[in-house]
Image (cartoon, rainbow, N blue to C red; front, side, top):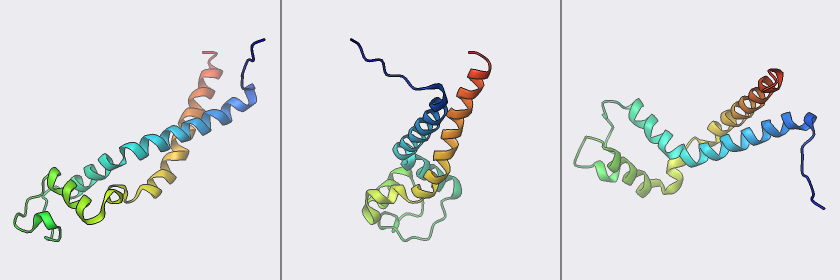
Length: 111
């Protein structure tokens, strides 16, 4: 006898919200260092930093590789995840609602 696992229709919406939130959290966690690097370079488009990082003492231009090295030396891996908590607070409900609304619209359209 084969066990069929199914979710009742009234629980599908909740499950879509939960799985959407979980996927948003996982994706954000995995890609956050790239978002952080992008924001740093966008905010400082002319790269005129005060020289405070080890690798920038003799050169005032900032490159991606110099910045990655300096963050790792000064802060370690956690330096790439500064600001992650507030981003997750924003991302979880956003992605959950995205999945929830997508499934509701599909069910309304009999898709």
